[in-house]
Image 1 (tube, helix red, strand yellow):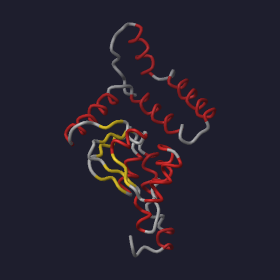
Image 2 (cartoon, helix red, strand yellow):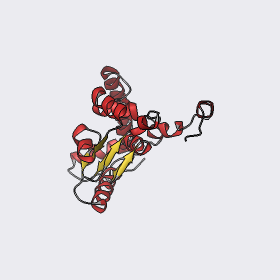
Image 3 (spheres, helix red, strand yellow):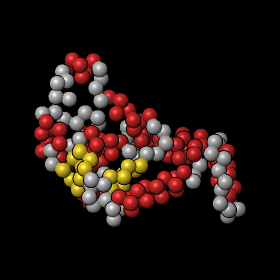
Image 4 (cartoon, helix red, strand yellow):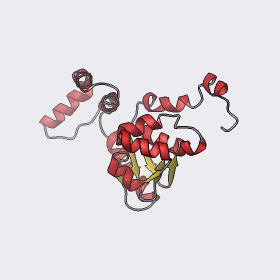
Length: 191
């Protein structure tokens, strides 16, 4: 990246495709971080829907040390996750933070005890749980949570309600409600 000029970076829209990953992948994306997730690695982890890490995880946006700033949404996503003051401190000093801090601050959903195997096991278990539910409901759930990051509370609630109402037109909603009433496990159509 050192020889990249402003003109080339701007005209080629350098790194922009990364920023769109979070909005273009409709299925839930789970990150499992063990070790370093710095700069672009931290930004990729922040784009994921669920982030698990272990105590070996180290996160950070050290771009300031290279004469630049995060370029794939790190400043925006980190600030939304941990607040302005803490994000300012981390981005302007290039200081790293631990997996434990990531969980305490809301960056990670949880710290999984153990090594990489246990971390991956938890990530796969969560993926299996999510995959066992109605596909259309999972897609809608991800969409409304992502919208909460863009809309005011009032607009977000109205958006959520519209999607909630629309799910009453799905086959899976009928299957789920009927199974609940009959105290059975639903067999989703995965429509």
